[in-house]
Length: 528
Image 1: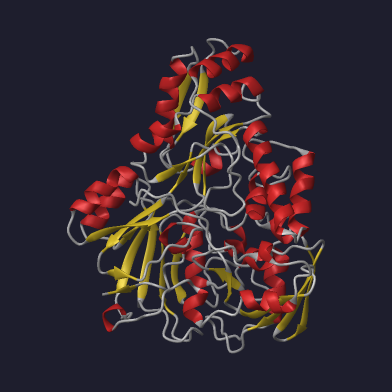
Image 2: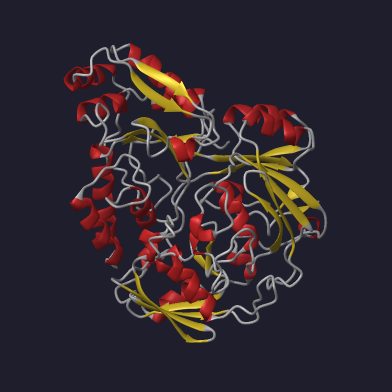
């Protein structure tokens, strides 16, 4: 791993529009130099690097369960993202610099960042042979707004007050307020396009690079090459089998034994074992993902402000970085926007590991010798190790943290968002607006600590429509300070995504929205 901290990605998302958000500027975002640029792949410069067709691979992610889905609107875990990226496309996709690139949309234009015209790519077919039209796009975006469906993307989709077909290949989207980030939003996981009227998601019928041959929730999914895929020459592989192996050691052993060719979400402690084995490689993706400590503000005990501050001062970030993550991480500061993001606030004082301050606030909390249950699981990356270090530090100030390690299966449905004190595991998000909307707005579906602040909500809405980048940045800086000081979460580190793979597997490139190429490896990899 390089010891240099990555610098900011090129500032190319919607926030960079000048006043007026001219049609020419918006078109400039989406003028990708061919399909290679649309997915962030480098141009092939030598015959030795040329992709090869044929072959199959088996891939293991790090989670699975009976709630697995191939309904893009209902996705909640990385394994869902992998499957839906195999079987569906979105209107846009985010490249290696998190800029939106055209996929099913040939262009997305706006003169005021409020009314947007989407012109669709012609000649695209669903897996059953039906042509994709504007009716499919209108249906896909509209269903995200259905409260009964319960899509995590509903807060993002609710800003669309009108989604109207203007012809078979054109859609007009009107927003409740200007949002220069709309092309970015449309490139996120939940905004895949499904067939008009689809309600049965026991299988997947999309426009993606692979057809769904088998989908068994909690067991596996199998995708086979789509012979009519609209991207010329893709995909490269004939078949991909994808499933989950929750245990890190078992996942690594499956790779090293040759049973799988790509293992997602490798524990940093396993990197030495992989590197020592000939014919295998580590693939690192830096971005804004984090494992956070969550104290629910609406629960007795954990909702105490002094107790939460005590916990935050007990986090030894440098020790966690070295001992748990083998330096595959960047020190965090309880603010959710990471240093690679151009809206990261670098001026907030770093919260230190400070036993004296922790002891002071713990004494003020009045909790005393009462043992506080702390739920941890391998489902939340390295949270068990983080809990042990936190427990050791807590003993030094008289705080008793009772670690309850629970199985990975069912953790997200039974404990996350429910337990008073537990851990989350947040995948990187492509923009500050999306991260704040999904996790910190008062009515956010994944508001982990149940933090509610009307001032924060107002700032979020104001920033979304602010086309002056300097003013928008200051708003995001203010919001980060509010989260850092008042929300019931502690963010020790921003974690690198680590995958391991056979050296024969080629084509992986980092996409900061997550490991395994932003969970979109399927159409981009081949076997040498």
